[in-house]
Image (cartoon, rainbow, N blue to C red; front, side, top):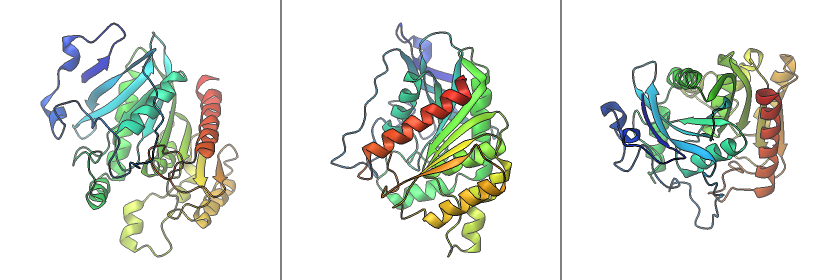
Length: 302
């Protein structure tokens, strides 16, 4: 395992040792792209900036099941803890400043937030402006690999003295929102999930190949959920029709998942929490974040 954490007392030389495998495809300045993903950043955006005062933040790597040294960004409160763990699943742009800031927001709320870099085996999508290439990279991150990466993240966290491995949650955005549903159906150790506008079902006109590539779909996993999941969706999301949201709600009801629910924000577009994009809707983002904190408070701290 390679660690580069920002310590409250200052960094030590050994914090900057990097393994050869971890360096593959990584810029010389660190494990992750330093700014906001240019493919998504709006010129008019005024992103939320969360400082690291009172936090320990930085990059780590740990082994995934396939032997890859998986990079991740970690933010946690200063002190011994142990703190409840929240896995943060990114959108298709990977680990850029928006995802790091989300981790710091969670850390300010008392959680150890860990954002694994699911895509960097192929290439880091964060600095790319070519959306076609971004989509090609993301398509290579298959379900088994992603679930393996989450398993490795949870295993690594369970070995940290500052982490409470018995209280774990997950949140994710867009691509990562779908991952939330999948992970909460896969891992019994998950105590709560919050899915921000993740796809729930294949498009009605999807080809058999597209349906298979996206499987397992959340709408088919309702009965398998191991913990409550809160879904946060926008009424005006052009990529996730309300019909699929309604289908997911019906699947949850049929499966008796009374603790899981979906909140739909009127007129909100896809990406309404993404404060670096034109799609950002402050009121809806704040309401969704408050609901996230309430669920995690009840399930991870209660």
